[in-house]
Length: 107
Length: 107
DNA sequence: CGTGTAAGGAATTCTGACACG
DNA sequence: CGTGTAAGGAATTCTGACACG
Figure: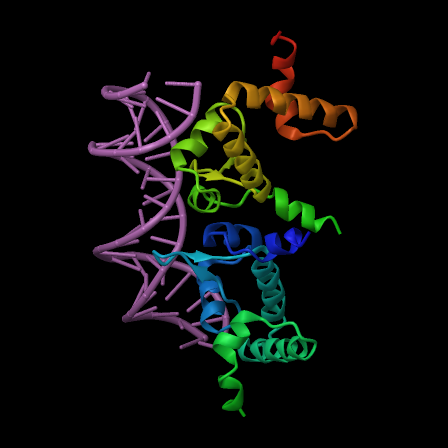
């Protein structure tokens, strides 16, 4: 079954639960989205929906921020990882959709 | 890691997503709770929170209802299953909390 | 019995902005 | 740069009840 993985990645969690689980403020969570570090989905009415893996990701981000890493750097690390995934053949949808173009601009 | 299981059982999903995923109405979902077929948690403000396994359970319930099985019967089947789990040593919290007393009354 | 619905209220989330630094 | 906050509005969820059957 591929189900466990899908539970981990399925975006069904409101921001309220996310802040509770991560200890971050909603302001922080939204800001990291603005900085392109996380990619929640939206309900038709505009509510953000997160997955468990988003929550894990946020905890990683929080650690780095505490260590003084800037969002810009964290973002570059993400790009690096995604690149490896591409190479290994694991396509990531948000990467394809929102980052592939940019990669050829960012120098 | 025990994490996959915890994702499955962690109650973090609002009723809106549940109705969307199961195709049931909120009225139905709440009714099945009233009938003691599912056991969502509550936020401090009273919002119901469901897990992925709750959603799976709801789909099972929906099937049985369609087959004309009454909630009362579905509930008894649940009790039966829980009993087996007890025997095999897998304690289930809601069973312990809300049903163990009852078992000695229900004839 | 199982489910639909209108009703009123309370809690959640959203965006854009000002603030500090 | 990263985060707090007050502001106003829109969408969500909650409960108890009436309805049908």
